[in-house]
Length: 455
Ligand SMILES: Nc1ncnc2c1ncn2[C@@H]1O[C@H](COP(=O)(O)OP(=O)(O)OP(=O)(O)O)[C@@H](O)[C@H]1O
Image (cartoon, helix red, strand yellow):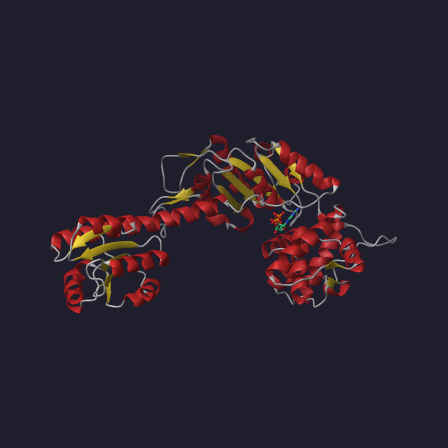
């Protein structure tokens, strides 16, 4: 038998179990036996057999085989993918047909012929492996497609209406799109919307955060590698560009790419092919490209930090997402939206926000944009005991000042941002996760800000 695996044998005759155990031991990885149908679920969840060999004729109803059929139903209810081989002393075709119809994989008769039994179990093991493999691939495909339906884009402000209008115009096109906007403005969300309305709707959506891939892993992650390409490459692995082929590739934080990596990416995009590390032959790729960044790429080009030819390749259309503080009443719409979601998640029944609380949200500068608003609402919903959220339910890092309009107030964004980051770092005693949380941004975004601000 080529395949070895785990088998569970269910039979009410201990002599049969003993004989089968002895016979199958050299061919199986592990064997468990039971005379108790009531133990089936326990074995299925703890032992997780690849194949179940099930006797049809327990003492009760030995002739009809009904108890065997009941066991089969119980097994398939616990795991619809289970591979079950039926066994009976009364090999009659009617029962065999009924067993297969009810979900059994195969049928053997007692007394068994050793070779026949082994052949049946061998194919059952193969079937079990391929069912698991298919299940795994289906899960991967689902993850790749990011298939959780159409994301909801909240906002009625003129700025957001313009964004929605452009997204509408871009539906059904394959154009390369560059999404520009501060951290947390919804770039990722919009990239997923673009995919949802594109001709590649049903194909893979592969998102890569270029800001989080260390330079030395860039090529193996994006282009993949062949077995033996480097010490740890025990087997070949496709890169993310290859996996995205036929679908959409979302390159987030493209502004963080170093010049050498920009050159490699540009070559792949221009030639529409990649070469896996350790490979000689190129692999063709066909991706619709969506890129995003919070950096001013045009300025980076002017300063020599970003290749102009790469910018031209990725920005057929540029989509600018405005910061939250420029979207006025959208702040309240989004707050209500998150309140509804978190009420549901945390089993709360908070009815809304007081007028003063709304004013507090409207006055705040939201350096972390929608993500910060989302976290602020989550925190408030968890902690508040009030029926309506009040100003005291919203805690903002002291540094990220509210936007007052009095004369002399600092309004320069970069300066405000620097102050906010410095204060958050002080308040958190240098704990990056805590500081990022206070600012309402991700840890990676905080690292980038520290780098950008030279702190
Ligand atoms: N207009 C919106 N309507 C509803 N939810 C939104 C909206 N904009 C952003 N969000 C939510 O806010 C959070 C942050 O958005 P997203 O991750 O898309 O921002 P981003 O610009 O890609 O951030 P980063 O630059 O840090 O990668 C997400 O949970 C997203 O679903």
